[in-house]
Amino acid sequence: QEDIITLAIESSCDETSVSVLKNGREVLSNIINSQIEQHKKFGGVVPEVASRKHIENINEVIDEALAEGKVSFEDITHVGVTYGPGLVGALLVGLSAAKAIAYARDLPLNGVNHIEGHIYANFIEHKELEPPFICLIVSGGHSHLVHMKDYGDYEVLGKTRDDAAGEAFDKVARALGLGYPGGPQIDRLAKEGNKDAIPFPKAYLEEGSYDFSFSGLKSAVLNYLNSQKMKGSEIPVADVAASFQKSVVEILTEKAVQCALDKGLDRIVLAGGVAANSGLREVMERECKKNQIDFKFPSLTLCTDNAAMIGCVAYYDYIRGIRSGLDLNAFPSLKI
Ligand code: KG4
Ligand code: ZN
Image 1 (cartoon, rainbow, N blue to C red):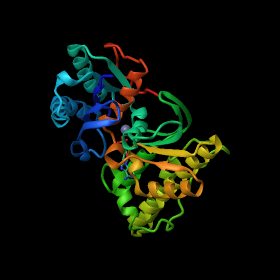
Image 2 (image 1 turned 180 degrees about the vertical axis):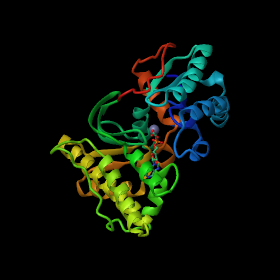
Image 3 (image 1 turned 90 degrees about the vertical axis):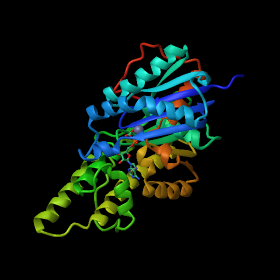
């Protein structure tokens, strides 16, 4: 059996990333070129700026990934690329590069769903991990509770009805004047604050629902900040960060654990940018232990957007015989 050497590209948002993997789980390189500095002054990702930056960066990042992986184009046997969900202009840059390489070298191509990619970051981190499990995917664009039954076989059990978890972190951080991206800033400040200082709400929704809603919580924080300003009171920034984070973390944990118990599964896997949150990891760890549920999460660089996780999905699709054509197009609203 020949080794499968995958070149994977991710460009769905503000990271230009290219990875080289051997047989899906062994990462030879994973270069992540973040555009955060370019978007910071606008307080969020500007799609047009993102597309232009991807164009400027892509060839260089590909070269870096090959060099660090100690491989040349001749060694690559397979190409994987994110084709959605994400920003259409940003997606098209990675997609065009991937298709050009696949065409020029006559290599098999696999288009990858970015959300699936986040789940698979765990397969790279934990070499023995196999489905089935419950996966909580929490990122800037998505909050999903998924039952991963097998490779390529998912059942979405719950999702957000409004803001994604990461989006709520970013919006609250912005209101607190903490800058973009807000998640890591709130995480840091929350450690210094009192999480019981302000009783922010938690939305449970209907009995038995695994869906999430974070817009009510976000509004409650904004209302609190406004009323403090009206009263001329100082805003206890660290306490607000800690109290807000507590509400998000508790609702995510309670629903994920309930979901695993209801489905009779003894493993929960965390994924997406918000999986980097130290409060979420801590509370999940504790509650899972209490309920005899095995709990796994990826290391920090694998939580946020990167091409290695995309290459891992591409590999598992490839060995199941799935192929994408050169007519593969960007699909901004792709669902899992
Ligand atoms: O997965 P990701 O890199 O991009 C998307 O696919 O959306 O996630 C980015 C999101 C941002 O909203 C960011 O604020 C959040 O993940 N994030 C965090 C932390 N690190 C990143 N949220 C909370 N705590 C963190 N430590
Ligand atoms: Zn992502």
